[in-house]
Image 1 (cartoon, rainbow, N blue to C red):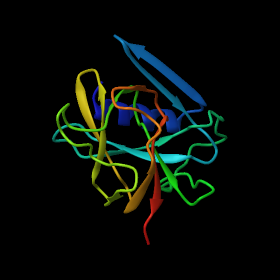
Image 2 (image 1 turned 180 degrees about the vertical axis):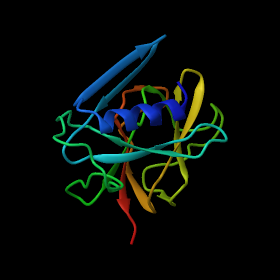
Image 3 (image 1 turned 45 degrees about the horizontal axis):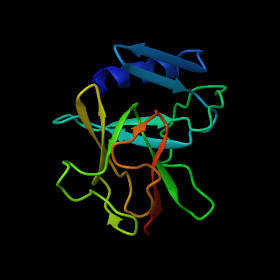
Length: 160
């Protein structure tokens, strides 16, 4: 499933009365959950494709109505950090290759639009970009780990 199809599904579900939507196709699983206040915004873009903004639902709470206004970049954590969540189900990679350095480390500063990691889904390498200038405060997933839709990939402290 390519990013355009995922975007179309998200738009369709956001306009519908569904609180939750789940689809599985040939080893690819997608789960969309609406919630009242979106908890994060993630970015997905395949090779040569523009990034796609998607809202994620980490808490699983169903929404009363879909959000129609742009949503904030992430959910604020008590220490002021925001979460960068996985926009798709796939495999998390911290670097472009096994012998390459990681895109970001804890303590590194990242710029808006900078690639943070790759989430591979159905042999498509989706680059996940930062939506803000920030400092990486936590990377709760490990390289090569399977990740779910909405799972926290990075915790970032916004830079002023």
